[in-house]
Image 1 (cartoon, rainbow, N blue to C red):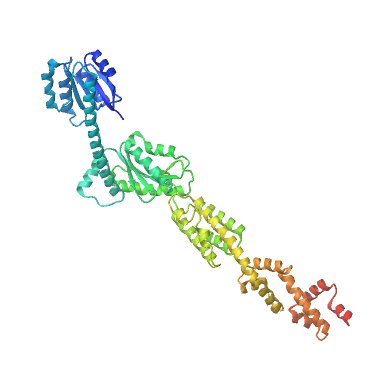
Image 2: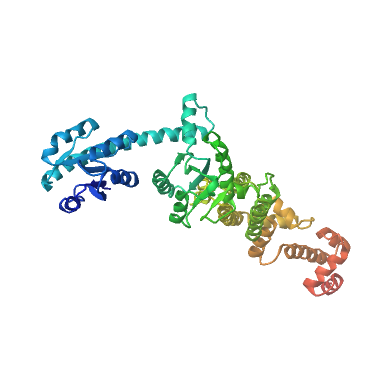
Length: 510
């Protein structure tokens, strides 16, 4: 950026010549204004804040040296550099400028080559001073940031540090904190943007906090209305629709109380857990009217776990959707929701692990537990991951159970053939062989072509037929021996399979 130059001379032709004959842009300058005397020059220095003032010595109303002396008496640390122009006959008079710290002199009439050489020296001095001031400003700002961060985190301050903080604080009537969080890939860009914008603003300080989170501390005047920081507005515009979450705290009249603003900003940003609109700032004044609840609705997620244990995808989806809906309605505190979901995820992993492996594949996808805890996730993210993990686990468990079942299905059939006379149920059989009753029934159907109950009755009637052929026992005794406690039940199933009663069957045999 070029340095600004103000030209002062009572001769319009001289001003015009200076503006036209010298290539100011090439030399690193831009002419910001012109004046015709010292009085006018003082006003323009006030208004334009030039880096360099080139002035004639003899002018009406107020000469150049008097103007310089007046300015320096009232603005000794303003940083404005002066150079004077004068004819040869006024050279001795102009040497008085040396006592004002002026070391640059241009002899009239101005020769462009000589003037450019002098301006080159001035530019080098300005650049050196600019670098010195920049380093000084950076060091001062880093010191200010350190003091503000200590107050923000309620760290003890020495008396001298407290005094410095009070000086910074006096610049505004009120101070506040906006917490800004972004996902890992986006955070460096967000951090650079906030740092650049706040450096150009008045009384804004960037405080680095935990990973992917920073605080923007800013001062303002409540009597002028609470207007969002320009940095925040630009951040919202630049990262519109992206995962950048912001929470604004409750303002306080002093930086010594900024820890309160920080605490309320943390409360505010927590509400983004239920708010998926990434294009706004949630303020504490808004969030405090919607407090979180801190009880553990364990029954909701117990149903989720139970549906996985039962290997029912439909039940699992229903239970998961219901749990998310109820948690949102009740506004359960995010910290509790996260703990509960993590508990369920690890419970699911343990169920899968019991099958002999595969849990790492299920829980190591893009949105795993580590990614979920980065501070920029919503309720939907957690339950989307829970849904993915649960469905994948059920699929794996079903496949593993099917594989294992192929090895035990014959063993199950053998057991049935040995115990069909007993009060054997599918539930009891499932318990004995550690299978889900519904799944066991499906396995038996695929293997035998008939259902479990049909198989039991077939085996009983098959044995009853063999005993009837021996003609040694009464029909009621045969019914009881093959497993029927009620004769009518035996009669019904016999007739169903043979189309006749047991007595008719015997008559035909004998």
